[in-house]
Length: 415
Image (cartoon, helix red, strand yellow):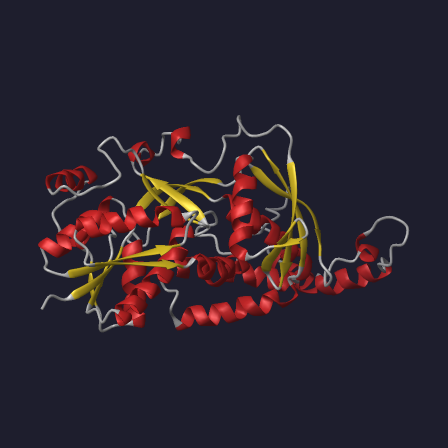
């Protein structure tokens, strides 16, 4: 009796060829699993199912996970301030552990012995799928056809598909490799592999170019409760709908394009281009409310946590104790991050132009230079005297005592 394998199936070239290869070359009964985490996926469901079954799958499963993706993955990353290497909002990296978890769940429901994916052997996604599976179901066999077969180029896969009458939605003229979900769109390969090449407009699908964006700016207001975005222009909106609406608004103004030289987990530098209009705007707004409600010390530590959190996501370590610990800290920091941010969208830029919060640490009476100033200016002299004490002590005992020391900041005496 053939082993049953659950394959994370997108309906694209790699996974369509993988269905045939796993069935014919390895003898598995393949159940194709498509997890919906993107825009308008329901309209493609019938086509994807037909392609999977025509290619040789014995079954097809569809799971709409958009709400879980935004609520339990994207928004926690937003609250953490997670941007990989300070730029990438981690759209693909966030979706992979969710898809892998659902793949494991379906494997249990289908009494499958194996799971599989269409990740290459030189990318990050293979790590995210494999490590998540190892964490949640170490007994399941993991099969990655692209690491095993001898087809090393897209052209070779297309030739294989043509030879075996596999219907795939690409041709040898297809330029880019694309992955997209609600949180962002990743574009790579083709002319982008030369880092000297400016991305052509044909690479972008969600954002207008700056030259085509409206000349007049748009203003939006985003409301947060405990770090979670909940309103748009004063209207209560669920997470998926809010992201979808911001996606259109920001993309119209060219907001969310990211051109990034990225360090992959496997040690390769890769030129990646992203479109993330909603994630970009929400990140801008969230930071504005945080700056009003977190102390200097909290902001400093949280910036360090944000880097760690981003790398954890990127490295496929979502289902770990380390993540649980970081997530607990992030959740604690968000308990007062409730308020609104006003954002201007204009010619590719999202700029915070106003913010307010009921528990803001900003006090006009202390910050103002106008009438009503309640700050005690006289107290500043004593504060500075105490603050500068260690500086004076070191200067008197070390720096001024050895003026010719080459490390002496002021340099040798002019005489």
